[in-house]
Image (cartoon, rainbow, N blue to C red; front, side, top):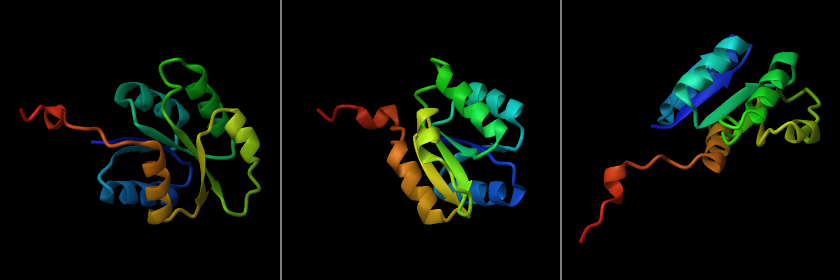
Length: 130
C-alpha cells in the first residue's frame, strides 16, 4: 500500500487530505507538529510528503528532508493557499518536487500523487508464468 505523510497546520485541510488519500487507497499519517512529521517520516518511510507552505516549519522540514541522504529521494509536494503568492522557484530550489494549491480537490491530489508515486507491486505479481 502507498503511504503519504501530511504536514498541515489547518485541521480542516488535514482532515480533507486524509479522507481524499484514504479513498484513493493510501495509508496516511497526518500531523501539524514538525517534530512528529520527522518522526513519522523516519518510522513509516512515506512514498510522498504533502507539506504546508509557506511558513518557517514547512521550509525547515523541506530543507531537512532534502538535505538527508536517506530522505531526499522521497517526493515532497508543497501546498499553498491559492491567494498566497508562492515563490515556486524558491520552493523548487529548496527541493520541492511540485506545488498543490489549497483548497485541495480530490482530482488535484490524484494528479499530483500519480505524477510522483508509482504503485508498489506485490512481489508475487512479478513471478514468472513459465
